[in-house]
Image (cartoon, rainbow, N blue to C red; front, side, top):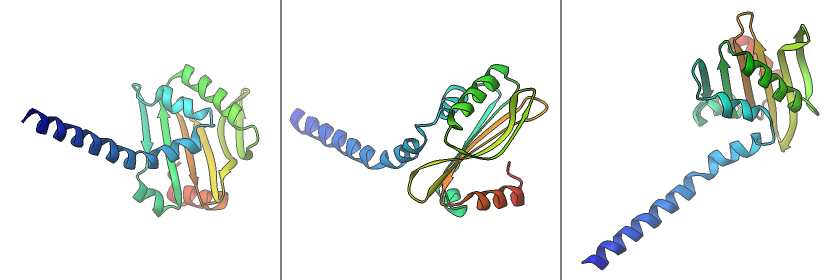
Length: 160
């Protein structure tokens, strides 16, 4: 009887490992696309802190807008987070196409960059804004949409 229970436990464990192996590759691909970026550190460092809202869209929503990945973070009144985010943006904008960038007192207050591609037909964008109240918004988007599509989407839906 003990051998049968041990065998059932082994089969159950192996089944769980196999199922996890099938489920894990999809999210790993999205992280793979973003891992070369310093802004990933902003999401990691601040994503679960107080006064922070982080959003990651589901596959169903992504497909609706022609995206493969969407992640945003809003951080309220955190001067250290603002300095850190700006440093990460400076590192990631090297090699990027500046679509829009606004500075005030030497610091970026609004930016829209198209990053170099890492996968054919997948464009990558970073959007950044800090409002007059000190609220930081950082958005990472990737997908088949081009910069004109993204501008149309943003300004017709007022999402950013």
